[in-house]
Amino acid sequence: MAKEIERKFLVSGEFRHLAINKTEIIQGYLSVDPERIVRIRTFGIRSVITIKSPAENAKFARNEWEIEIPFSLAQEILGICLPGRIYKTRYIVPYRDHNFEVDEFHGKNDGLIIAEIELADEDELFDKPDWLGEEVTGRPEFNNSNLIK
Image (cartoon, rainbow, N blue to C red; front, side, top):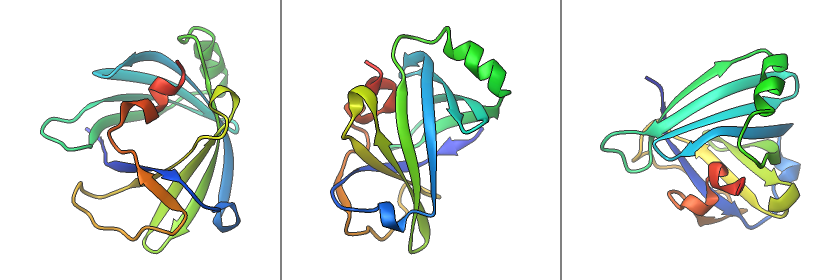
């Protein structure tokens, strides 16, 4: 079973000039139940289905399974997803020993920018760039699955 250990932050400064990659993402959800989130994501011509659930005895780690699926299948599944879509641009921004994934949201979430960092364990220390703002790890209102509402 794969584990996702990430921390989330609002972005309070300019970061785009530091990005080494930029991708447009569309996400839809089949389930937003916190016990079993099921997401379809397309980026470029790639697509994945992702299943997430809480990890036992964890501060903020989650179980995560991600499976690549054909783009045409993802388009079909997006058609039966719950109402609402996430539209965002993802920037990969390296900083010291990590890469931050910075999502700039569009549509009804326009103006929201969230940076995520994936860690090897929940207690891992990391350096924070000066453009990083308030930490929002664990705050449900900043989960993508709640941003479709």
